Length: 156
Image 1 (cartoon, rainbow, N blue to C red):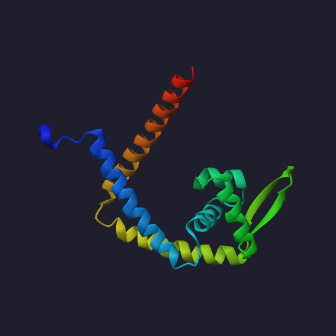
Image 2: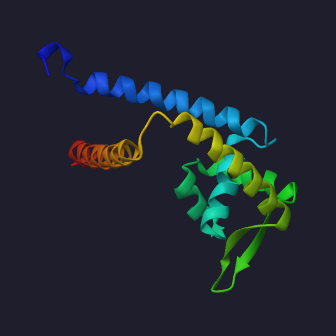
Image 3: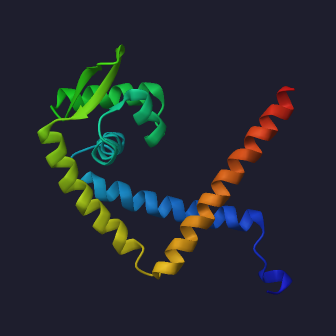
């Protein structure tokens, strides 16, 4: 690779940002047809694939702020898509669970959403997809380590 064709960190960041923006727009467009908001969809999807979870567990999976998470759960409960139940081992903790209607809705919605995302990734061969996944995961984990280290150095 020539010097002018090298990919520096700024160029990589720009390409990652643009790809993220395009994929997020596609994901949001795919979800609009479900009648659900993006946050509500993410909560239902986490419950579909992980089973009943506490609000804190859902929050760590979908990366929503605490207030947004509570609002999403309130909306979903009001619409009959989830229930809040006390955890038998800890009466303070509430477990969020899909109702039959919630499960039906998210299964159908997620299947269409997955087809939409699959159509966007068709240019990638299976090995390219696997390598991209591993590379992005590696990059993200390392960036988090660098951020945490930098934060500690500034404090201490």
